[in-house]
Each structure stands twice: as C-alpha cells, then as structure tokens.
Image 1: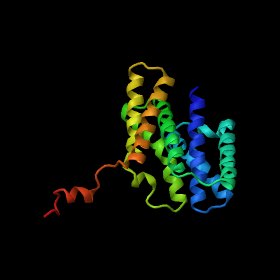
Image 2: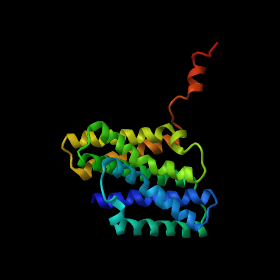
Image 3: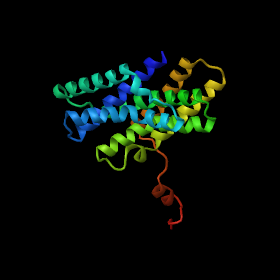
Image 4: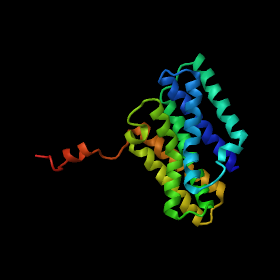
Length: 210
C-alpha cells in the first residue's frame, strides 16, 4: 500500500515537471527531463545521505515506467487542452505531501534520529521542486517564494514522526500526515497565506519605522 502511495506522489511530481517545462516553452525531451528531475531528486539525495545503495529507483522498473507514462500522458493532454489555472500548484502539492511522509518513513527505517528524520523528510519533499525550478530558469524557486511550502512539509514530517511513536500503523500515519501537508499547502495557495515578510515587519514598527 505504501508503495502505491509513493507511486501517486512520484506521478504528481512527474506531471508537475512536465507542466513546468510547458510553461517554460521546453520541448518534449525537456519535459521528460524535468519529469524525472522532479520525481527522483529528493529520494536520491535522501538515500545518499543515508548511505543506501543501490539508489531506490535504479532497481524499481515500475517506478521508472510510471514516470515515463505520466510524463507522456501529461504532454498529450497539453497538446489538446489548455493548462488549467493553478494546475502546477495542485499536482505539486500532491507530490510534496506524499513524498515527504515516505521520506520520513525511509529515514525512520534507516534508524535516523528524530531530528534527522524531519530534516530528511523535508529534503525528500522539496528537493525535486527546487531542481525543477532551477532547470526551468525560475529564480527564486517556489520553495524560496512560498513560505508555507517548506513549512507544510515540516509539519507533515513532525506529524508522521509523532504518529509513529504513538504506534499508529504505517499506512494510516502516512495518509493522515500527507493530508496535513496537502491541506496546509493548498490552504495557503487559495487563501494567500504566508509568513510576514521582513518588509512587513519593518512597516509594523521595525527598525525603519517612524
């Protein structure tokens, strides 16, 4: 069940990679490159930090096939239909929510400390998006423009860790934590929520206020 859940998250990131390539006017090859970059970068970095060999995706042909199929299907969709408003943000939120909690589980299984679990979970969730945006020439990446992006991943990682220590089953813990991440991220998108910017703090009586 958890593997199926992970495939859902990877599929969402693959679609987000193609959507980002579409917005950047890349060709189909560029779309596939971004689909793979967005899908496997976070997990690759996580496995490298944990010293896990071989890398998880090098022996999972189902995962690689899913990325290719989702990437091609997304391209076909964009060939005949227009890009829905906020589609990239929605599929990106799905990928972030699922991949973050799977990253937390992988770190726990590797015997990482609680703090390391949280760090590796957030890294797994956000790294693909950062690399995708960098390859698109989009600066700063979404992570650095949207406060609630990384905070949503952080909250979900903490939630999964807490549920794990409470003895909640792996699948329910993953589903609940992924739901928390998705709700926070999409709530921020549709409600325009973000942390106060430095400029806003100064405007409310900071050092430069008069």
